[in-house]
Structure formats: C-alpha cells, structure tokens
Length: 225
Ligand SMILES: Nc1ncnc2c1ncn2[C@@H]1O[C@H](COP(=O)(O)OP(=O)(O)O)[C@@H](O)[C@H]1O
Ligand SMILES: [Mg+2]
Image (cartoon, rainbow, N blue to C red; front, side, top):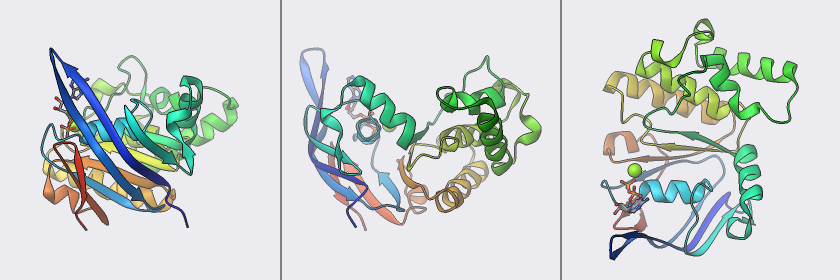
C-alpha cells in the first residue's frame, strides 16, 4: 500500500530581518495509513513548520508533499482549502476555540458548508458524546477547564471524519494528568475513526504514545524508530 503522506526533499525558509532561517531542510519521509506518528525535537527545530506544510496552512519553498498520492504543491488556495476541509483535522496547544461560540457551535464549524442541518446536528451530537461533553454543549469555552477545551477541540477536529489528524503540542498547556487523558483519547479516536495521527511534541514521554517516531532538529528529520 502506498503511504498516506510522503515528503520528498522538502525545504522551508523564513526571513528574519536580514538573515534567513532554515525551518525545514530536505525533509524526506513517509507516513503509513493508521500510524500514530510522534514528531519530537527541541523548540525551534521545525515541528510546527512541518505540521503546517503537511496541513496546507503553509507551503514549502522546494520539494514535494503528497497526500494520498496527490501533490499538494500544485494545488491552488481553493483546492488546498477543500483538501483541508475533507481530509485534515487540527488540534493546537492553545485549543483555538472561538470564544463567542458555544461548545456545540465550535464543534459544528467544520461542517458549516455543504451539510444539511440534520446531518450536522447528528454528527455534532455523536462527537460531543464521544468526548464525554454532551452536557457542556451550551457552555462557552471560557466556562471549561483546559482538559475540557482540548476535548472540544478533538471533537471539532474529527467531526468531518478526516483521514489525518494533526496535533501540535496538544498537551503543552495541560497538567500531566489531563495531558495523559487527552493522549489516551487521541489514541482511542485514531482507531475508532480510522484516522492517521501526526503529533508534534518536545516531550519524550509524550512522544512515547506514538507507534512511529521522528525527530526534527535544525530542520532535519530523522527516523527515531
Ligand atoms: N513565521 C515565521 N517567521 C520567521 N521565522 C519563523 C516563523 N515560523 C517559524 N520560524 C522559525 O523557524 C524555525 C522552526 O520553527 P518551528 O517550526 O516553529 O519549530 P518548533 O515547532 O519545533 O518549535 C525556528 O527557527 C523559528 O524561529
Ligand atoms: Mg512548535
């Protein structure tokens, strides 16, 4: 079976004043469907840049990124948006929930386009139930604990049934007990929803949750088992 994600010689540079920062340096790797991949490495190593390029939030300066054998580099903004909407769910360190929307409305966001009200309502109900937060549907993010906010974010990331879940330091803003609960939930969800997970973390213990490990340091990715 061909890999669900393939990076070939991907480079990404940022300009910082007069100098240039190499955020990704000839990154080549493959990720198989169903994997739970941990991307480890020190702060500033390139993890977020890697996830953003993979998720179509940023684009590489050179090299190729294939998602399900489709070359992302050639896609225009509309095609990339469509790809994200169909294939990708995101989880962030700071949850990134919309403060003025309720829990239910936040989870519904990825479904706003092209779904009937009935389908939306059913999907949102299913996901809120899955993460154990049906009773919080009418709450606002500010009324929730950090762990609850990240569970809402997981429901939102999965509500459109993406094939890939990208998580950038998903436990970075949680205490260790809640962090472990979130990792367990992500691990269970990856099986229940048949989702490939790519998770960035600077913490070796958290990286242990993956079944496949990479390290990204100074923009260079190496397989770590
Ligand atoms: N928008 C940006 N503008 C300038 N430099 C950036 C930007 N984003 C990231 N960088 C730089 O790229 C390198 C990799 O950053 P990042 O991908 O955020 O690493 P990590 O997530 O591993 O901490 C760092 O040197 C960082 O300062
Ligand atoms: Mg980062």
